[in-house]
Length: 258
Ligand code: F6R
Image 1 (tube, rainbow, N blue to C red):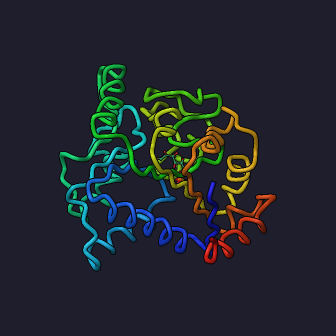
Image 2: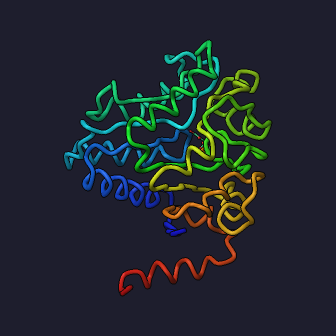
Image 3: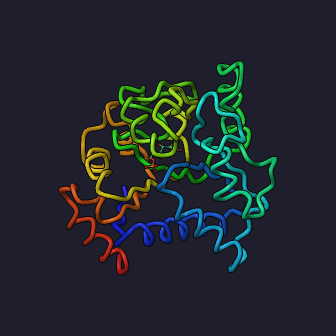
């Protein structure tokens, strides 16, 4: 895994945006896997800036979001549909028909999840997957004990995740209990993955994901099995990494690497 330790969340976002730009420059019709939550907000702001100021083009891009709360309609302000439109899609030139987000209001979730997986395949697979990490080490909503081979399905959120996400809702009782989420197996099929984390509250999860054993108790640790993952993390979230000095050394030496 490549580990880039940024000075702060802004630098993390700019670094991640440069990776996205590189992928889009090489493949203008790339398929992007996208995350919601607080972590990628700065990345989306930077992509919007690149679109406006540098002409970063999304016209041929296809996106698949990781997850959506079950029961929230698309126009609910806390739905991930709403989040993505507010924070990215309505500010760039992406074609609406190229946007895929799990449908939290489907009345046949099994069929929907199978269709979602099939659409990813038909679009050629995900070229670049953006991930955040939960304080319990989850990626997407693959909570501890999720199968590392799991596919898109309904998951019951962990109480920790419900507590973490209560900050977005008027009260904790309003946080949905279920979500449709890509599986760990789905995520691991992306060609390239960027894991983002910032803040001291992510330090334990980041250390477990990067340096701990591969275990379904920290689903982000499955990323160790993928051959092209870049973790772009800020100093606070890197604080518990045992090999932090080595990662910084590698970053410095990369410039002159043969
Ligand atoms: C969101 C998602 C989640 C978040 C994670 C971190 O689509 O899949 O795994 O990335 O819960 O959330 P934040 O960034 O709000 O700390």
